[in-house]
Each structure stands twice: as C-alpha cells, then as structure tokens.
Image (cartoon, rainbow, N blue to C red; front, side, top):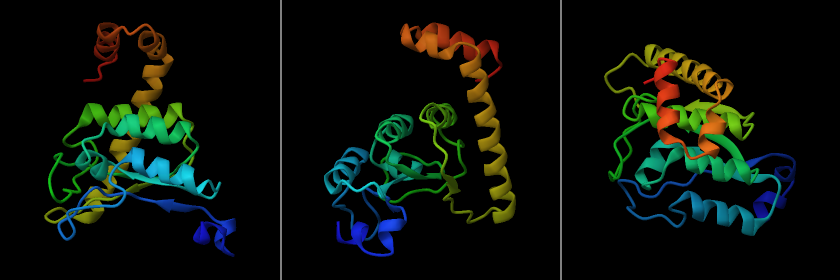
Length: 180
C-alpha cells in the first residue's frame, strides 16, 4: 500500500508481474494468477493491477485465456506480455507468440476482446538465433491476425455456442471459418 499511495505513484498505474519460478530462485512469493489477484485485491488500490506474461502463465500450469478472463473481469489487467513456450520448465522459453500453443493464443486474444482490454501489448521474447526486428514484425502480424480471427468468431456466433456448451459446434465454426 505504501508504494500505491505514495506521490507521484498514487496518480499512475502500478503493475505486478508474477513469475512462478526462475533459474536463480526456483521459488516465488506470488507464484500464480490467483495469488497475484488476491494480493491486488488485498492491497485494494485502484492504481495497482497485474501484468500477465504468457510464458509465466504456462510455467505456472495455467490456461492463459482463463487468467486474462479472471484478471480482466476484476478490472485489474494493466499489461500483457505475449510470447510462448513449453510449459513447466524451470526457465521460460520466450518463443514467438502462438508458436507452440496456437489455439491457446487465439483464445487469449478472444478474452482480451471479451474483457474490453485497452492497455498495452508487449512481446516478451528472446530471439537468440532470429533477427530481432524480423521476429518483432512476425509477432505483430501474428497478433493482428489472431485479433481479426477472434472478431470473426464472435461475429459468427461463438458466444452462443459457448453459452450452450456446444464444443463440437465451436470446433465446426472454427473449421468453417478456416481457422485451425
């Protein structure tokens, strides 16, 4: 509360980004979306929210879209770091967005739309062998394409299918729109 209430901090947004583990400490005080959201609620300041990092969500064994939905519904989603990786490793991979989990990437973008997210999108990747400019351009193209796909899904009746728990209908909608 001291940081959130201090001047000039009380006039700006402060965002916590949890990470369940890393190669140095292996443990975290705030290891999950639920714990981070609970902390933000306990602090109870309008200027304190969360930044969700897809790699960290995967490391925590979470569904990134569900985390966006939870934090967005609570009005605490202040930032998003988009990347991808293999889950449950001791260190994050920082791969290009949607490269390992393309369906999860689309679902995450859909929930950004459904929660009315208006904040910044960051790409937190580690282009070790790739040209970093080319990778950044790919991430931007990928995100924009997924945004359009999510809009098409919603315009084509996805919400009704989900409300009716019609998984096959949702899959057939994806198929009919050429989204795999």
